[in-house]
Amino acid sequence: SLTYHQASDGLQALQMVKSGCKNGYDGYKMIVLDYQMPGMTGPEVCCCLRECGVCGEGGVVVVGYTAFVASEELEYFMDCGAEVILGKPVRFGEFEAVVGRVVCVVR
Image 1 (tube, helix red, strand yellow):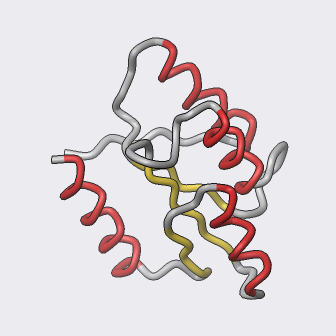
Image 2: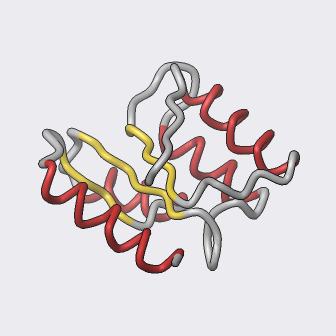
Image 3: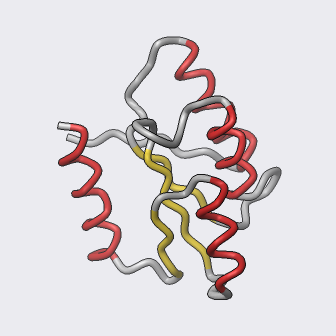
C-alpha cells in the first residue's frame, strides 16, 4: 500500500522532507511538486532538496507538474532536480505509470 502526505505550500513540503530525513524516516520515495506553490516554487524546493542530498542520484524521485509548456520552464525544473515533468491537467494514466516505475525501482 502507498502512503502520502500533503503540504499546504512549498516551504512546508521542504520542511516535511528534511525533517523526515533527519528523523530517520526514509519512507519518501517520491515527491510531487507543482511548479507554482505558495511560499516556494516547485523548482526552488527541488533545488534545496538537491543541495542537501535528498534527491538526485539514488535519492528521492521528484515529479513536477505544471501548466507551463515553454521549454525553458520545463528545462529549469529538470535542472533543479525533477526527474519527471507532467503537464496539467495531469492524466491519471500518466501519473499511475510514473508511480508504477518508482514503486518497481524501490522494491
